[in-house]
Length: 447
Image 1: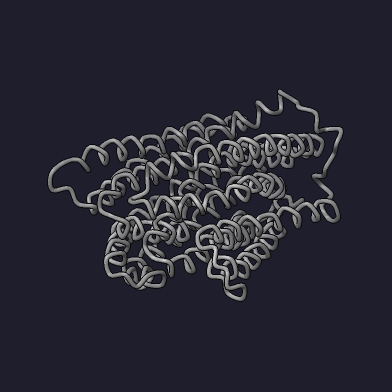
Image 2: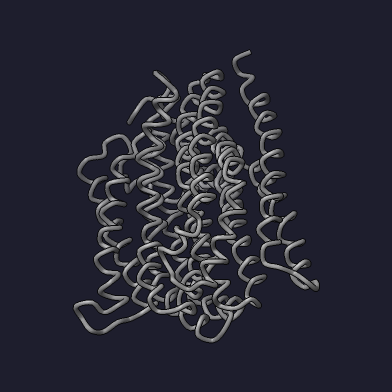
């Protein structure tokens, strides 16, 4: 356990954010490694795997349901020096993780076919995406265990073990991907199915390694079988914080689905271009997300310790860090956008679509980083519904106009990117108003 209620706020945020960013980057490399080898199989396979990756966002939204609640409640318990409460939340989060994993496994297989038939630009794209997901769904189910174990450590201020395990899993995936996708060494290429299988096996290795860490090294939060009986009151506390965040993360899935639906009439090359560019964008968002994930436990421990000024300071300093990093990444997209896309494809049409996407969408990087920071504060305070409201306005101002606009004469794919930027501006403004309100309301215990 690491006490975040003392010492430099900036140092705490950076100390946690850097390992988490590395860990999330490593996790994103699952997709980038797969994408690199899959891109050799043509636009239809790239588009199919890209659409399958969007499906994974829906599952990740479920992981947030208990992960966010677990981090907030354990961090608040640590700040209040209540180890028993922290262990109760941890063990109950494991039960929720198992329940969500079962839902993801059963529901995932039931929805693969309808999902890909609805989004695939053609039969080849639909088939590739379906193959990928059928082999990746077990890995997505195992992500619940990974998230539960990693979230508990984050709540106690410890992030390096999770980063190390994630690094090990991406190495496993990097080794397996060329073997299973391209058949290197086996002469039996599995294509998109191999990409899904490689990721699933890598996640399984990660779960085993994290469980071993808890059994041998972790002492503050531990496995306690006597705490594995359902505690409805604790579940309600976790879900009260986690459900809004899960819903908010699910809005990203809806955003991806809307874009794939809108651009499907432009062909597989357009879907492939968006798929590649959106993966790059998601990778570039990792620093801001890592800072947001660091803000949550730092602010939550100080909230539990009833230190109002340190909570406010965490928000201020975290916001500035995120803005600085995202400014650099925005300039990179403006300067070398085409080069970034060409790393994954040589098709001119695909490169053109992806480059335009990065050039336009990167203008919202700084404001997106600010919105992430606001989300971290909402999580720390244990009240995440305002964050959902801010994200919901973004979806409402993007999805409905985009779907309507796509059926109008003269519609161009670039219009979707401009509309997305405008929606993020509104989201950031609303998030700022709401976070100021929440800080004023919930930090009154110091008066």
